[in-house]
Length: 407
Image (cartoon, rainbow, N blue to C red; front, top):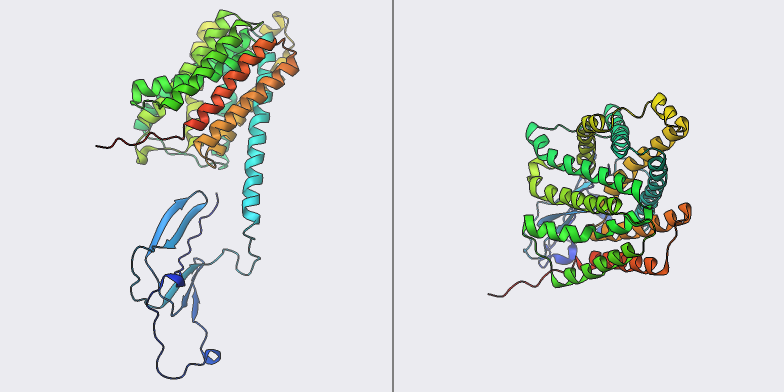
């Protein structure tokens, strides 16, 4: 965690009534140096004759930033300047230009990992589902691996273990339920149709987001948002009509995934609204993963039975070691890309994250077509391109706020 530095320093340009010096002659070379006193908590207190203006604090992305309030006249100062001292006294200070460059480098690395983990997840997950036609069991394995990772991080204090109340668990339960269904429907679609087609259909997520937000939150879209949905729906329809791997189970599974995933977003706004009960995104996702595992386990066992044992796989003629290794890689990438996605969301605005998600979908579609050599017709490519262009347009017009009505 980046430590927040608090600096209180007045601006000399704001002082309209500078303090007059005594009539005695003043020699700056003979003036005593300001007295300094350092405390154990790293703060340095030094006396100063400069005025201390009113302080206004605002929360920025990189910490608290304090600045004088220009709208209030400066009162008389008590002659004390308080400034936060760096933790390592005497060390070289970081250049102002190096910090933005380092932040950009970290953000670019996170975006690269987000895309890379997503590509590997879709490729290995598709290979597993082609050889092992039990999507509920595959989904259960992914939640199980995520549960092990989360509990390991909490046990080793790699991430702070949260304190969850019963009321919070009740509020999170609907989120976990739709999260479980969303990933299950995605795996069902990937097992039926091509990876590129599943992600083309999932480009309709903004459409479901707008409809559900209007129905349950009363958030009605602007004309610009509605206009951006037209190419999304039209492009998905055009791509579906010309898709070589098209079948109705795969199509409706992907559509159901859109519905449940966007329901999760709407529910998170509806139920997790109290500040004292709010959780950061990574902690919330970790808790949802564990709850999804316990929700998925009985359903998978009762519906598909225990099919993941070596004897069952050998009886079905499946390469056990290959299936296990690919399932493990897919599950690790599944959890990793979602964790990285939330890390990015903590650093950028939702609009920027949405644009990055649109680019990620393009990258996944292109790489899956190349890797699996999926046959794609020109009209199919056109439909996919129109849909993705609509998603990009949607992410841009979401920032346009409607003009307030004049009474």
